[in-house]
Image (tube, rainbow, N blue to C red; front, side, top):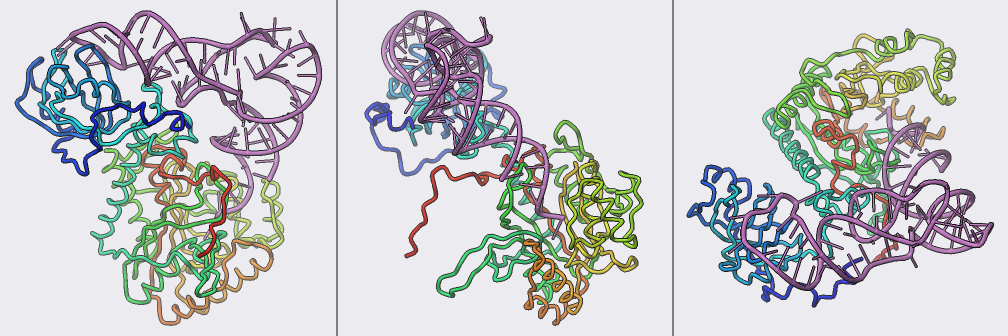
Length: 490
RNA sequence: GCGCCUCUAGCUCAAUUGGCAGAGCAUCGGACUCUUAAUCCGCAGGUUCUGGGUUCAAGUCCCAGGGGGCGUACCA
């Protein structure tokens, strides 16, 4: 790296004092620009401000230096004449990227740009090495992800995406809090991984001498809390799945799960519509969001359609659970699905749906009524045998959320777990193991409840028009730069 | 895991058919009191990802490895 080649003595000599221990900005770039827009060209405002940020550009002009300072709100020009700027030489020697604090009078240059005259200044931190191209910025994606702190300064749209994501999360909390949902925290270390169909990361607790798993979903703990009388709960937190990476998958990602007693999946779909369209209006000003090279209209109500209806629309194939299993398997094979012996009719229908239909669904649609075979935690459909009251919202061909009226019968739940366990024995590493403790909780009574899981990262992608998850995760999972060395346990 | 693409100065990118490795910005030195990606003059900056091979000659072609991207598989 360049830091090796930059001996300390080459750094600007002054200001000679070490950086201050604290600094008190009383203004920011955006506010100053807004408040002094009406100032006449070439005049001073009489207002003195103190600001801090990084020096992003510098234009030397002999006995006058212009700088551009960027803070969290934007950029503002610094005006530094040799006559009045303390340690003028040193100011001109600052590295691009250095953090500086500046106090001075707000003024407007003769050319009409609101600026802060540098009446006093100090360097708060140094940027060692050279700064990325001031015009082209930083394009190398590896560097952008590994050294996100550079990306955030140099690529304004990147910074803006993360600000939007953060606002989105706090807005979700407000939305749920207003509806009397209680935010809780449940374990991330699970003795039995459950609540989703995924491979877990495994770890070990030394004192307990027990293997534990990083959670793949908080679902089963949150429903235990509903059993405990917390009638509306939610958790926003990281979950971990030991699976491949892609533009839509990061091994650790953020999930919102909520559980709502006395409500069913029709209630929950309304909640999702309100939440997502409301966020769009709040964060983008419109219910229409750009995604890829197309737009998605998020205005409710969203279409509801059963999985079978959607398959038929897409393929003209009228499928049904009652069909002969081998016939379904033949259709699936024709469509290019890799059919396994263990697949029943329900699993085959899901596979056919995912192969042919899901990616084609652009406008928001709630896909409802999933086969029981692939929904081990969902309650049987009240009218349609073999199906469950489950929905997923699909937007832009991607799954945004998954929810269902919860299975509350402990006997049935145990039977579903046992079926999962059989699949596990048959080689499906993602099938759920039996969680007897969860069954025990159900034996104490889970009231009629609906549950929902929303991928926060994917929601952020949707609302920022981003097509890769790595652009909405601050530090996406990457291959380690140096071979990992096992830390010695103490 | 598989397939395709890619890797050149700190950053962004060139380099014709295999024929002397270049530019802009940044850095460094100099000029300049109203610039806006300031401008002008100058200096310096390279294991062309790594290792092998073909060739009179390799950034360019071939093989192996590494990093990255995309697609695919996996991810109900």
